Length: 357
Ligand code: NAD
Ligand code: ZN
Image (cartoon, rainbow, N blue to C red; front, side, top):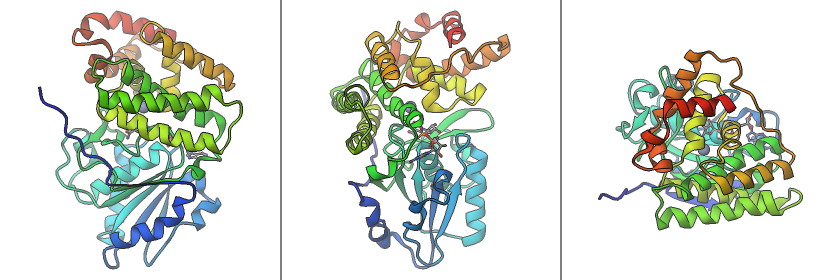
C-alpha cells in the first residue's frame, strides 16, 4: 500500500475584498522587468474589476474567451505569443471560472516546458516547474483553484495535465467576485461541487481525509441550495469555501459516475462541465439514490432547467465514441463501483444510460 503524497497550493488568502491585496501579494514575485500576465474571463470585459487589476510596468491583461472549454491549441498559442512578445514573464494570474483558471495554469506551465501542452495530457508528464501562477475564482464549484490538474481538450482526448507542478502558487478567494454570476451558471458550477462531494463520499477510495472535507463541502452546498430561500452574500461566502473543501476532498479520493459519463458528452457534443454533470446526475438514482433525490429537490427549489434528450438522434458510432471516452476513465469507475467495475458497467448498460440523457 502506498499513500498519495500530494502537492497543495502554497498560499491562500480568503475574504471579501481580499482582491485588493493583489498588488502586495505579487510584488515579491516580480522578476525585474518581466511582466505579470493577467488572464481574465471575457465576462469582465468593460466591467469595473478590470480597472482594479494592479498593473505595473509592462504587465498585460489578456481577456480569455471561454465560450468553449480550454483547448491545447489555445494554450499553445497563448504561451507562444507571450514568449514572442516578452521572452520571459514573471507569472500568470488567472481571474475567472474553472476554464480561465485552467488556462492560466496550463499557460504558466507551457512557458517553461517544450513542445505542445497536448504532450503533457496525462499523469506526471510535466517535467519543469512553470512560471509563478495565481488563481482567482469568480465562480465557485469546480475546485480548479486547489486541484493538481488543468483539464484540456486536445487533438485526441480531453484530459488534464495532472502533475505536482500544476497547482497554483497562490489563490485569492474573494467571494465578492462571484456575486454577479447568473443564477443558472452559479447553480451548474455549484452543482459540480455538490456532485464532487457525493461521488467522493459514496466512493470506494474514501478515507477520513477526503471524508472530512467532503462532508463540510456538502454541508455548505446544502446551506446554499437547500436551506436558503434567496441568494445573499453569505451564499457567495459559503459556496466559495464549499468549492475549496470539495476540491480538497477529491484530491485524496476521486470523482465517479456523473463525471465519467459527462466526459463522454463533453468530448462528443462539447457539453460544458457543470451543466453536463447535472444532465447526467439527473439519471443516476441507481448509483447515488439519496444524492440524486436531493439534487432534484435543489433543481426544483432554485428554478433551474436541466436539458433533456440531448442524445436524441445520435448515430451508433457517436454513442460508441462517448462510451469509449467514458469507459476510459478507469479510476473514476473503480472509485464509484469497486475493483470489479467492468463487470457492473458494461457497454450495454452505459449505452442505455446515454440513451436516457
Ligand atoms: P467557466 O469557467 O467555463 O465559465 C462559465 C461561464 O461563466 C463563462 O461564460 C464565463 O464567462 C462566465 N463567468 C465566469 N465568472 C463569472 C461571473 N462572476 N459572473 C458572470 N459570469 C461569469 O465555468 P466553471 O464551471 O467555473 O468551469 C468549468 C471549467 O472548469 C471546465 O473547463 C472544466 O473542465 C474545468 N474544471 C477543472 C477542474 C480542475 O480541477 N482543474 C475541475 C472541474 C472543472
Ligand atoms: Zn467536476
